Length: 194
Image 1 (tube, rainbow, N blue to C red):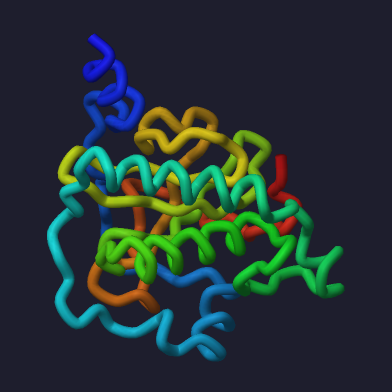
Image 2 (tube, rainbow, N blue to C red; image 1 turned 30 degrees about the horizontal axis):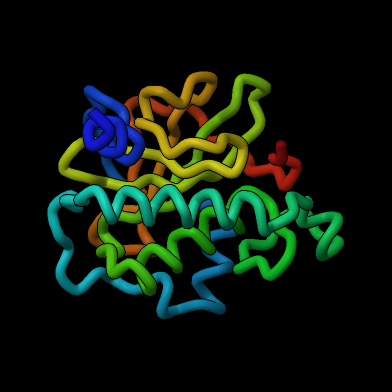
Protein backbone atom coordinates (compact mmCIF):
# COMPACT_ATOMS: atom_id res chain seq x y z
CA UNK A 1 0.00 0.00 0.00
CA UNK A 2 2.84 2.42 0.83
CA UNK A 3 4.35 1.84 -2.63
CA UNK A 4 1.04 2.73 -4.30
CA UNK A 5 0.76 5.92 -2.24
CA UNK A 6 4.35 6.85 -3.12
CA UNK A 7 3.63 6.38 -6.83
CA UNK A 8 0.46 8.47 -6.56
CA UNK A 9 2.44 11.31 -4.99
CA UNK A 10 4.62 11.59 -8.08
CA UNK A 11 2.23 10.53 -10.84
CA UNK A 12 0.68 13.26 -12.98
CA UNK A 13 -2.98 14.22 -12.91
CA UNK A 14 -5.14 11.55 -14.50
CA UNK A 15 -6.70 11.94 -17.95
CA UNK A 16 -4.49 14.76 -19.18
CA UNK A 17 -4.36 15.34 -22.90
CA UNK A 18 -2.26 17.42 -25.27
CA UNK A 19 -3.25 21.01 -26.00
CA UNK A 20 -5.03 21.74 -29.28
CA UNK A 21 -2.35 23.61 -31.21
CA UNK A 22 -3.18 25.98 -34.07
CA UNK A 23 -1.00 27.76 -36.57
CA UNK A 24 1.83 30.25 -36.17
CA UNK A 25 1.16 33.44 -34.22
CA UNK A 26 3.11 36.44 -32.98
CA UNK A 27 5.57 36.05 -30.15
CA UNK A 28 5.10 38.21 -27.07
CA UNK A 29 7.17 41.40 -27.45
CA UNK A 30 9.03 40.58 -24.23
CA UNK A 31 10.07 37.21 -25.65
CA UNK A 32 11.13 38.81 -28.93
CA UNK A 33 13.40 41.20 -27.00
CA UNK A 34 14.63 38.34 -24.76
CA UNK A 35 15.68 36.40 -27.87
CA UNK A 36 17.87 39.28 -29.05
CA UNK A 37 19.93 38.99 -25.86
CA UNK A 38 19.71 35.22 -25.24
CA UNK A 39 20.01 33.83 -28.78
CA UNK A 40 20.94 30.33 -27.59
CA UNK A 41 17.65 30.13 -25.66
CA UNK A 42 15.67 30.88 -28.82
CA UNK A 43 17.34 28.65 -31.38
CA UNK A 44 15.62 26.31 -33.79
CA UNK A 45 15.34 22.96 -32.05
CA UNK A 46 17.77 20.67 -33.90
CA UNK A 47 15.88 17.46 -33.27
CA UNK A 48 12.37 18.06 -31.98
CA UNK A 49 11.24 15.04 -30.03
CA UNK A 50 7.87 13.59 -29.31
CA UNK A 51 6.37 14.22 -25.88
CA UNK A 52 8.64 13.42 -22.93
CA UNK A 53 8.26 10.02 -21.23
CA UNK A 54 8.78 10.71 -17.52
CA UNK A 55 9.30 8.06 -14.89
CA UNK A 56 8.55 8.45 -11.19
CA UNK A 57 11.96 10.02 -10.46
CA UNK A 58 11.60 12.53 -13.31
CA UNK A 59 8.13 13.61 -12.10
CA UNK A 60 9.54 14.06 -8.60
CA UNK A 61 12.34 16.24 -10.01
CA UNK A 62 9.86 18.36 -11.99
CA UNK A 63 7.82 18.96 -8.83
CA UNK A 64 10.92 19.78 -6.76
CA UNK A 65 12.10 22.32 -9.33
CA UNK A 66 8.66 23.92 -9.51
CA UNK A 67 8.48 24.13 -5.70
CA UNK A 68 12.03 25.44 -5.39
CA UNK A 69 11.65 28.25 -7.92
CA UNK A 70 8.20 29.22 -6.61
CA UNK A 71 9.60 29.52 -3.07
CA UNK A 72 13.07 30.99 -3.81
CA UNK A 73 12.07 33.74 -6.26
CA UNK A 74 10.09 36.66 -4.86
CA UNK A 75 7.23 37.84 -7.09
CA UNK A 76 7.92 41.41 -8.24
CA UNK A 77 6.81 43.31 -11.32
CA UNK A 78 9.20 44.47 -14.01
CA UNK A 79 8.22 48.02 -13.09
CA UNK A 80 9.33 47.37 -9.49
CA UNK A 81 12.55 45.65 -10.54
CA UNK A 82 13.64 47.52 -13.66
CA UNK A 83 11.41 50.57 -13.95
CA UNK A 84 9.89 49.31 -17.22
CA UNK A 85 6.65 47.63 -18.19
CA UNK A 86 8.10 44.43 -19.65
CA UNK A 87 11.49 42.72 -19.46
CA UNK A 88 11.89 38.96 -19.83
CA UNK A 89 14.98 37.70 -18.03
CA UNK A 90 16.31 35.00 -15.72
CA UNK A 91 15.55 36.01 -12.13
CA UNK A 92 18.16 35.82 -9.39
CA UNK A 93 16.05 36.72 -6.34
CA UNK A 94 12.87 38.27 -7.77
CA UNK A 95 10.89 38.30 -10.99
CA UNK A 96 7.47 38.21 -12.54
CA UNK A 97 5.55 35.36 -14.16
CA UNK A 98 7.60 34.93 -17.34
CA UNK A 99 10.84 35.10 -15.36
CA UNK A 100 9.69 32.16 -13.20
CA UNK A 101 8.80 30.23 -16.39
CA UNK A 102 12.12 31.05 -18.08
CA UNK A 103 14.13 29.86 -15.09
CA UNK A 104 12.12 26.64 -14.70
CA UNK A 105 12.56 25.96 -18.43
CA UNK A 106 16.32 26.46 -18.27
CA UNK A 107 16.71 24.19 -15.22
CA UNK A 108 14.52 21.42 -16.63
CA UNK A 109 16.56 21.42 -19.85
CA UNK A 110 20.05 21.85 -18.38
CA UNK A 111 19.77 19.89 -15.12
CA UNK A 112 17.14 17.29 -15.96
CA UNK A 113 17.98 16.78 -19.63
CA UNK A 114 14.47 17.40 -20.91
CA UNK A 115 14.14 18.24 -24.59
CA UNK A 116 13.62 21.94 -25.36
CA UNK A 117 10.76 20.82 -27.63
CA UNK A 118 8.85 19.66 -24.54
CA UNK A 119 9.41 22.57 -22.14
CA UNK A 120 7.51 25.50 -23.64
CA UNK A 121 6.75 29.03 -22.50
CA UNK A 122 3.00 29.62 -22.64
CA UNK A 123 0.76 32.69 -22.48
CA UNK A 124 -2.65 32.49 -20.85
CA UNK A 125 -5.30 35.05 -20.06
CA UNK A 126 -6.49 35.18 -16.45
CA UNK A 127 -10.15 35.71 -15.54
CA UNK A 128 -9.29 39.36 -14.87
CA UNK A 129 -8.24 39.67 -18.53
CA UNK A 130 -4.61 40.10 -17.55
CA UNK A 131 -1.95 38.18 -19.49
CA UNK A 132 0.12 35.64 -17.56
CA UNK A 133 3.06 33.40 -18.52
CA UNK A 134 3.45 29.80 -17.39
CA UNK A 135 5.48 26.80 -18.53
CA UNK A 136 4.01 23.83 -20.40
CA UNK A 137 5.59 20.39 -20.10
CA UNK A 138 4.67 18.06 -22.98
CA UNK A 139 4.64 14.43 -21.82
CA UNK A 140 3.40 11.09 -23.07
CA UNK A 141 0.75 11.44 -20.36
CA UNK A 142 -0.51 14.79 -21.68
CA UNK A 143 0.43 18.44 -21.27
CA UNK A 144 1.11 19.82 -17.79
CA UNK A 145 1.77 23.33 -16.49
CA UNK A 146 4.18 24.83 -13.99
CA UNK A 147 2.87 28.13 -12.67
CA UNK A 148 4.21 30.61 -10.13
CA UNK A 149 0.61 31.27 -8.99
CA UNK A 150 -0.14 27.63 -8.18
CA UNK A 151 1.96 25.22 -6.11
CA UNK A 152 1.12 21.99 -7.97
CA UNK A 153 2.25 20.73 -11.36
CA UNK A 154 -1.10 20.02 -12.97
CA UNK A 155 -2.67 19.18 -16.29
CA UNK A 156 -3.34 22.22 -18.43
CA UNK A 157 -7.06 21.39 -18.31
CA UNK A 158 -6.98 21.54 -14.51
CA UNK A 159 -5.63 25.11 -14.65
CA UNK A 160 -9.08 26.62 -14.14
CA UNK A 161 -9.52 30.32 -14.65
CA UNK A 162 -7.08 30.49 -17.57
CA UNK A 163 -7.78 30.88 -21.27
CA UNK A 164 -4.82 29.35 -23.09
CA UNK A 165 -3.68 31.69 -25.86
CA UNK A 166 -0.31 30.65 -27.30
CA UNK A 167 2.94 28.87 -26.59
CA UNK A 168 6.40 28.35 -28.02
CA UNK A 169 6.62 26.07 -31.00
CA UNK A 170 8.00 22.61 -30.24
CA UNK A 171 10.23 23.00 -33.33
CA UNK A 172 11.65 26.51 -32.87
CA UNK A 173 12.04 28.22 -29.48
CA UNK A 174 11.74 31.68 -31.09
CA UNK A 175 8.44 30.85 -32.84
CA UNK A 176 5.00 30.71 -31.24
CA UNK A 177 1.80 28.83 -32.09
CA UNK A 178 -1.81 29.54 -31.19
CA UNK A 179 -3.63 27.29 -28.75
CA UNK A 180 -7.14 26.49 -29.94
CA UNK A 181 -9.06 29.66 -30.80
CA UNK A 182 -7.37 32.30 -28.65
CA UNK A 183 -9.08 35.48 -29.82
CA UNK A 184 -7.05 38.65 -29.29
CA UNK A 185 -3.72 38.11 -27.55
CA UNK A 186 -3.42 39.69 -24.10
CA UNK A 187 -0.66 42.08 -23.18
CA UNK A 188 1.47 40.49 -20.49
CA UNK A 189 1.44 42.49 -17.32
CA UNK A 190 4.24 42.18 -14.84
CA UNK A 191 1.65 42.35 -12.07
CA UNK A 192 1.03 38.61 -12.25
CA UNK A 193 1.94 37.51 -8.76
CA UNK A 194 0.36 35.54 -5.94
